[in-house]
Length: 143
Image 1 (cartoon, one colour):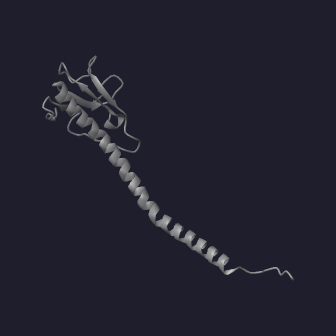
Image 2 (tube, one colour):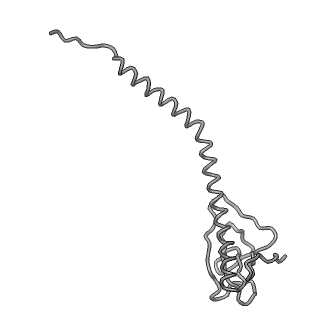
Image 3 (tube, helix red, strand yellow):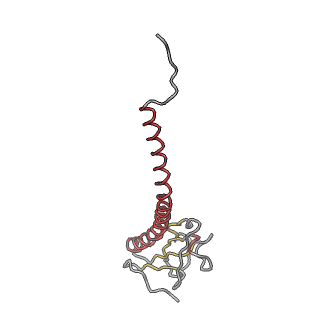
């Protein structure tokens, strides 16, 4: 028997190589179209996470005011309590205000919330803190 060396492709080899190149081309097109939409989805979810982080603090303060039967305050976080000169992006704290002086005194701190992720902001124009009364409602802001 004489052995010949083949110089071409078989039909199976040709079909496999064409299907691979088509798959790669379709993947590139899909990634080009889908990547911006996916990045928008990621940004939207990160914003929702930051928003829910603050809503958690408000709901926590409301619950604590009802359970402890005392007013509870959320304010901008500082090293030793509240700092009205700082922005809400620095984080916030929740504390009971036993003596109603709107300041964190010894034993009043309940929870400290971490700063917001870089690139996100939270603005509060009307007041420097949020006061929850014993009924769980938000009191009118002090101007």
